[in-house]
Image 1: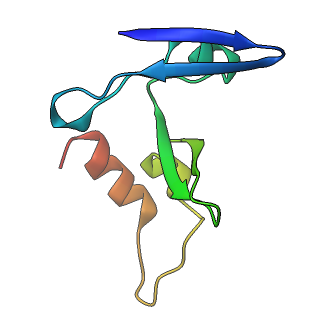
Image 2 (image 1 turned 180 degrees about the vertical axis):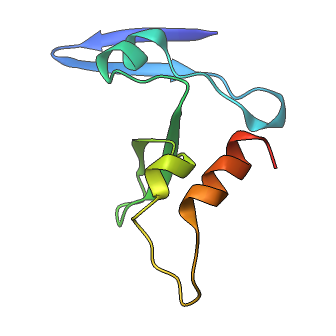
Length: 87
């Protein structure tokens, strides 16, 4: 169960922690931040002890091509095809 409380211009959302420590991002927050299922949440605790969340798109193999270097030769096209086949 989730609830929302409006305080001035700030919105405070509250959710429960379920089995296996899972929780839900409230619909209003998902909409406001334009979140979808293909995103990853980064969790951090700042110097004041507050939890900070960052959201980013989950990287696919296509996203990673050209971002990294290797010491040995690497055939990105071959690896992409293997990934597409589920290998």
